[in-house]
Length: 229
Image 1 (tube, one colour):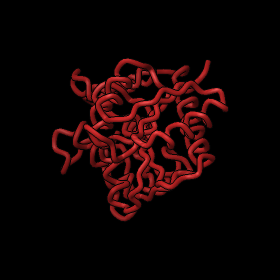
Image 2 (image 1 turned 90 degrees about the vertical axis):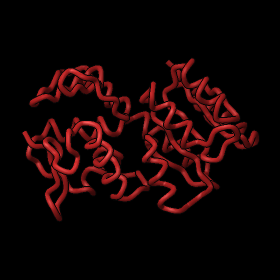
Image 3 (image 1 turned 135 degrees about the horizontal axis):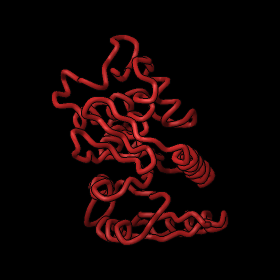
Image 4 (image 1 turned 135 degrees about the vertical axis):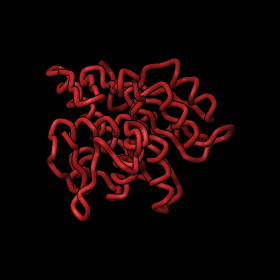
């Protein structure tokens, strides 16, 4: 079954080039040219990945990503002409899974898409061995990729879920930030370890009663993070 991609950029020549290249690889490609249209299409269609430009008319890419995260965990790759680290981290703060800095090589874009889809595919294989994990008030439905605290569902992004699932499955094992980056994001991911810190902080804000005194996800100072069984 063909993979479906939503490409969002107001520069029509860029969209045309990406679309042509992805269709050559047998993917189905839909296009949106402003933020509002992107959210509507993401809500209406089932996509395997979204390529999302940062600078858009009507609603910028970060706001689009934030809105998509309210109803979907589809992988989102930000396209940005801004190269500053904080912009990249900010993109990840809003729930993006990856970013590519413009100007980019279309081969790089395709390689990144395929890497993300491979990870998503391996996630699917793991789901076949699905089980429910329960620790205290925390319950993880690994097949449905849903998390509950005291019976209330918590909305996690795809990467937040991946980090938590890895830690829960290996209680009391300390993972360095570099290990988490390589395992969850992949060796080809161009970001740095601050990405991990951002996701751990967001995860704690969602699952911990008091994020500054965590019950589940703990810090081993100078080493990394671990899940308290």
